[in-house]
Figure 1 (cartoon, rainbow, N blue to C red):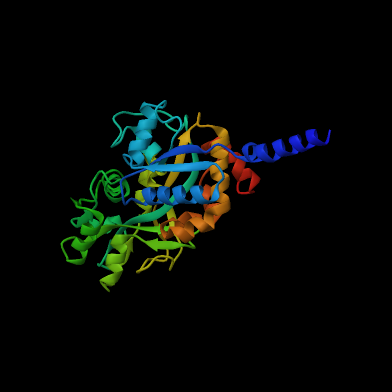
Figure 2 (tube, rainbow, N blue to C red):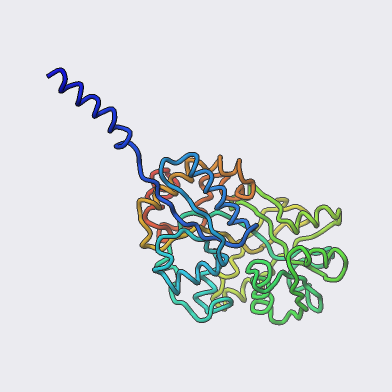
Length: 337
């Protein structure tokens, strides 16, 4: 009897680690190109899960960018079924209207794609060195330097704004890249330049984008250009208020000079998955992010605009936007009803 008990005890000791051990689950995280913000987020999450999670492993891969990922999810959902990928908040709006870079209209594009978390928050439109330029109405006959047209926030978005919502304002658009556009304005070759700032939805945390760093370093006095009431009314008349996504920025929040009342566009970046993505993994991923958001910011300062506060992870999102596993994690944390 004594020998039998000893045998059972030895068997328990040997098997306990095997019972406790959990099989690692590797999740592909498809992003944008090397050096992009979302790629750096992926690398940070890859390191964090490897160090701090018992079984979840994020595996980051370069991808076609957030619009490219979203297009892939819409056209080949099976291929993207077990991936986490980035989707810009403007991507569904462009896809539903068949605007660049989407080849046709995709009705209800978010029906089968569900959000896990925000990862990025930017506000922007244009800046200028000319104090007389306060809104887009003051740009008539002027030159505006932008990023490349394929760069959504930096080229496509301001083009949509100026050509669709301010058709009576005749401007010359120069498509460069964000840093070159800013330099063109500083050098006097453009009257205004595209500008975005990494700014949390609650306006409490900000990081300068590289082109804004360049402008601030120039020591030039600069001014933000906002949207006029007429432009916002035009967007509403066209049914494109969601594309413009204009937000009032409180005075003094941004570097440089801004009017007491100013509206510019908000664009965010989200991490998403297909609705068929395993609910338990979505739950575990979001729960891990909520628990480790401060560590993420500590390791990657570019994530500060969202992950400084866990509440920003669901800013501007509704329960219907979220993957069921993510929604469960947020409700448990008291971040969403």
